[in-house]
Length: 454
Image 1 (cartoon, one colour):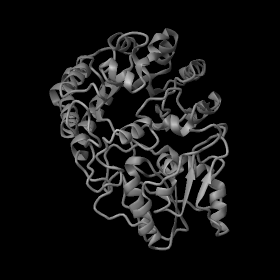
Image 2 (spheres, helix red, strand yellow):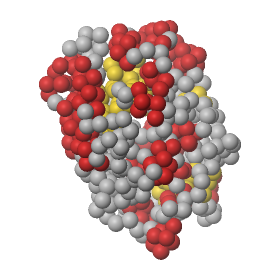
Image 3 (cartoon, one colour):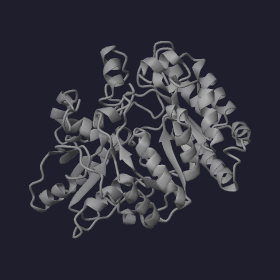
């Protein structure tokens, strides 16, 4: 997001996937600006970047540096897939959708000097024989956790989320045997399964966890709270080594959950009961909350912080609700005339952690201040000390206690260092065609990818 180094960087799995798809005779080098400066003057034929909405402004600045040196730039990822016309004002080519099945064609077109502007998937590629090449991470100082993907897609369609817009209702899993082989090949004892929701197919999730059990590993994931209704599933998580889980609570207010299309959070019981099920199984909970839905008030922040501390969460985050391209939330707020920035990710006045729209029952300034206050309160030393004392989770073993302390110290430092920062730094945006860019920045066409896609 910024032109600076980071202390909490994890391996960006997407680049290991790209490396595995690149023809063997192509020389590749990988730079992660969170860890190291980018050597813009190093000779290269093509620059490839995966871009998310928060990183778009910085990605466009990097692209301009390379293009000013005559180097072609291709972008992929969620953001360029949703807004290809925007991305093409800064890049030479855009890949819409997943890289499998397309990336080798992009490389061949560069060889033949016939690079197209847009490459689109015709369908959803199979995840069989997906084998990320992590050699590009060698020598780089990432957190000692291996990122691994089992499946893509999510069965839910939350108001604020872009995942459904990208994948539609398509859900794909890798063969369990290939996942097990990858874990054995990597050799690390802590794995982060990066799936947006690993539990979209419960029978297949159980098959995976049963296969993980003999490996004697620890693993982390992202879960939806409704899994706690399935005792067999939770027991398999425990036996197979699930250590931490990111849980999207989002709000303590049922009306807010209904507005965000997430009422199913409470379908099988109250939060406290679901939390107990996970913690009794030894799962350390990283709870996430968003603020700014119509029933939120200035009191909502303190209620969420008290809830997270009382339940001794391993970590928690308290975020201002932020509209992203193609999510239903973005269209709704734009239609209601509540957006502060037309495109906050490009607006030089936007600062990280700030409100991007006008909430119903508080001011935008109160939303910004409330989220930062909540983050600060949760990460105070007194809160860290109080949350430590749960022998089911944070004090279950010396390893977990060490993980708890290290993660909380990093979180405490990062929330203060990132707040109020300008995305991308001070460099101006340099579009390929400034006149066309200024006149067409709202004219991105409808997103289409694959069959039956919104």
